[in-house]
Image (cartoon, rainbow, N blue to C red; front, side):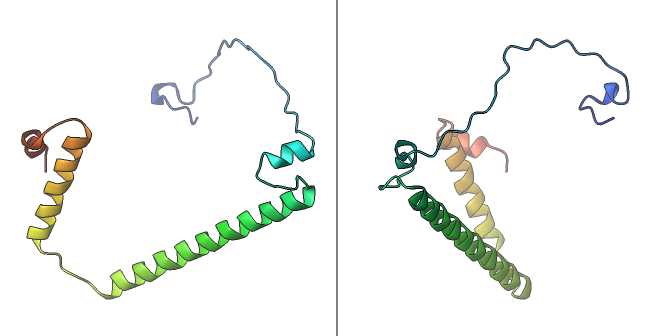
Length: 116
């Protein structure tokens, strides 16, 4: 039903496959050498847990800060409508066209030929 090719959706199909390898996931033991690879100097499980906790708290703090920032900006934009002059928009479009041409090895002449 959900097959990506529309002409084959809802139709019965057979597939031939070649299985090359079967693997099993083996989790490593929490040994001192293994733990030190993650930057835990003392190589202890408690040190690893503390490091993981610190990283998770940092990531959570960053995510919360990003979400609050997005909400503030969205609120400011929705309550303070600003009409941007068309000259400013045209200027920014030209800058982006020039940057795109440079990025792909073009020059200023080719930048001007890019669609607006």
